View (tube, rainbow, N blue to C red):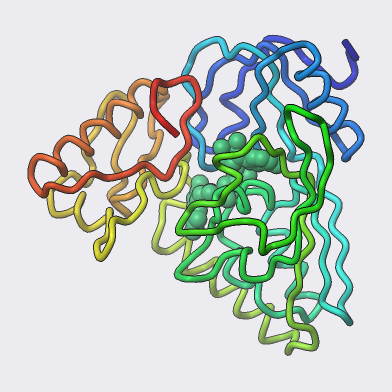
Length: 297
Ligand SMILES: Cc1cc2nc3c(=O)[nH]c(=O)nc-3n(C[C@H](O)[C@H](O)[C@H](O)COP(=O)(O)OP(=O)(O)OC[C@H]3O[C@@H](n4cnc5c(N)ncnc54)[C@H](O)[C@@H]3O)c2cc1C
């Protein structure tokens, strides 16, 4: 095993934005595609379970021993922008706020919405993260991936990927995202783009508990409804289990306000689901991905 790119028994709580997590048997942060591919191959050849994570901003990891290899992509952050053609190549670990600010500074239009989402490009494509009807899918040309089972690297065109509300076909595949090629509209008004980007971040921090440990929206919005409104209507704002609390600022956020355990958070999710189902007949589907729980992701 290559000591330089692996650690053993790594506590994952500092790799998630809600600041809870288990202990990974093996953990690695590759700095480029070659290291990433090597690690994927190593896991497969050694029959180790493989779990890819980005910025951990949509993850609830159980506080247990996680067998196998966890790869965090955050150090794969090469970003190439052509301001004339609008073609952008981003490695999986590029953070959306970095992407958004860099696009604006280069006069490229279409990424201003992404500034307030604290995830990586890989995580955003996998989750089809976005706001309103905007997501990276809109600007996507292709995605380079490596197959976890065969180690084959391929470049998928956008037409070969299925995107729906907070869903991409990567969620039902064995593919690890290496990088994405995108196109944004060139020759935008620099000042205006920078201002819009700033305003979008301000709006986010004013309406969501942005600076507290959370994983963003807990549940997907049901058809023709809002998870936050349903939770609010039940009077659950501020409801706590242990250190996990339903945010008083935004009811679809759970915050870790005093050393919450992953169990506290999981139980809070379950209680919300039960109450909404009993009282409104609606099943709230988690948006957050769970690792180490018996929950069908
Ligand atoms: C304050 C806050 C605000 C948020 N606002 C929004 C919002 O407005 N809209 C929105 O949609 N989301 C929002 N989120 C949720 C989250 O930021 C997004 O879902 C984000 O895209 C997740 O990216 P990540 O890198 O953190 O992925 P992670 O949380 O690390 O992983 C999420 C999933 O993606 C998979 N994954 C990650 N990288 C790869 C890869 N390279 N290859 C294969 N699979 C991969 C993981 O296995 C996991 O299943 C918010 C979160 C927070 C904390």
